[in-house]
Image (cartoon, rainbow, N blue to C red; front, top):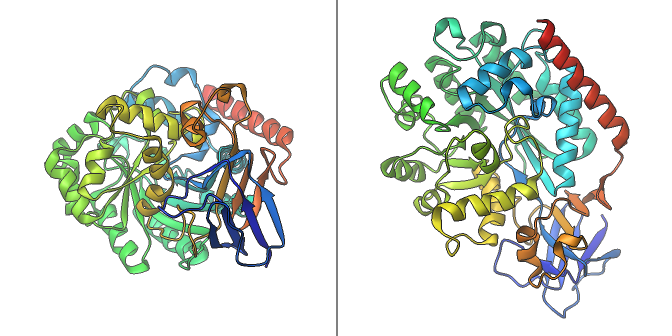
Length: 453
């Protein structure tokens, strides 16, 4: 195992209170030492990396995304709409996804995330029309090829428009198919051990796209197999109205009724909770993925991050789908989270380190991981390194604050499990021009299919 010293960083955010201003030492896939200012490692190193021009952070962790949506950025029929109408515009388009599209969309989303400092990426894929039954398998293959850590959530939709749901009938699956495939994916791919590179979670799309029976069965399987659960909840007031009308209860009450109010659950968005519901979520140990850019684009509302954290909720950060964010840039999302939360709580009550915490340790905790998200002894060696050489940083004085305040867009180096996966701003082993060519062709093909349908 190589021993690497990332030394003398310009600035470092560890997520802990320990002094690591002299850098960090990595052996194999693990951090073995934090070096204090003006100190040397206590172990012999094979080589060192001069970080004197870098801001060093834990690898950023994306807690919610829809990789396939990179194929429908700025889609004309979906512009200037709120969530339900936006979904109704795009479901018929997404129903034409094929395996080639799924593979290249996943690869591009992961590459885009890695270039922005992301080392662990979660994806929520719930569209599995005929011919795309093995979408998650394709995603696992792409992540393994790139060497990125990933948590794939096996999404599902079983409640179509004919039965009072939102998705078109041809985009849903039977509940038995969903259950069987969920169990297969856990058996084939889920890693329970510390340092896991691939994990599977179970993720009915939302309360308005699956039945109560499927929500309950998902909770049963997740408990039995000891895997996490994920869904969209309380993103919009329309969703709240749907739950009250269909189930006679508010969304958090529904979550409890179906066995989801526990620490195996993390929720995407989590905007429209009242004070009592926030307390219940915290007591149950539920996680929330804040998705600021998407929430602004669809005018869904603002997640109450400070209130949620004060109640004990584990708050993370996600870029959400590239059709409601139109990008997969994790470091840009951290800046957006800081500013949106300041708009809600005041500029004195949300700091740049709060935002970095949400994007690292917060996301890790929300998704049930304790081995990533901080730079500390014994933790996984997932590291992001950013240079402040662009014109946007000229004149900045506090490097760590400048990372967000001046708007960093791209990492210079990224390490995942002790291996360099991004060097000089480029993902190792990826032909970017070829990837862009294949992705653009897939997006054009999807658009043509939708027009001819």
